Image 1 (tube, rainbow, N blue to C red):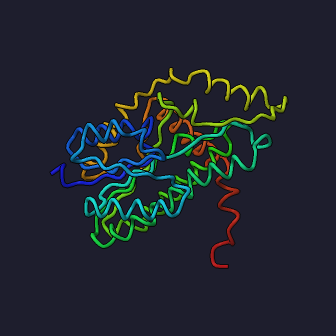
Image 2: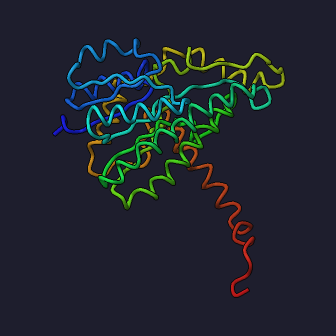
Amino acid sequence: MASEQVWFITGCSTGFGRELATEVLSKGYKAAVAARNTADIADIISAYPDTAFPVKLDVTKAEEIVSSVEAVQTKFGQIDVLVNNAGIGYFASLEESDEHEVRRMFEVNVFGLASLTQKVLPAMRARRSGHILNVASIGGLVAFPGISFYNATKFAVVGLSESLSKEVAPLGIKVTVIAPSGFRTDWAGRSANETHKGIEDYDTTAGANIRTIRGYSGKQPGDPVRAAKAIIAAVESPEPPLYLLLGANAMKGGRAKLEVLKKDFDAWEETTVGADFPPGE
């Protein structure tokens, strides 16, 4: 029954997290709804007072990770589905990037995600069941100018998730990477800081892409509500995907990346294979 399954969703103040929490609760599931400021999710909690549980959580604070997991397990008894959705962006070419901004982004997008997962896994292992969903990006599979370090965080999430899936599959735990393209969330708006260095040589590459991303904030083709329904469908599937791309542009970008890989692999196959010792040596 839906009411027996407990979701723990981070980053619920806006965007994907907010829509997913609302959709999950509307379907009758229980949900721990996490945000750095619980005032931002008060309306969700009041709409579902019996099944929604507010959680104050900054994923960069170890003590809040521990206390939040303990609180959710005390409230609901277990966590069946963990959605690592909290994340931020940063717009800059690699050379223009500020180290403080980059490290902060890694703390949220990678280390915070990993730390929360580590705290949730023991109970999932004990029950031999659970599903972990890590919200990456099509930018975790395809890189773009102007977001090199953001790409790096999301590539890290993809690699971590794929490895984790192989570690926990024999234990009955599933892992899914969510890879959206452009959706109407705050990611391209208030959720992303930007370089102030502005090196002219990067204006037609990194600079141009940053302006494009900022310019279509609020006009992206992706619908967060439809995305939420798609994520729930993946969790409800008896065979959920390891990779769930969301949005037509994500599919286009993913397929283009496959073609680039195939082209280089095929063109350099002889060189690649020739790097080994000859057979028998």
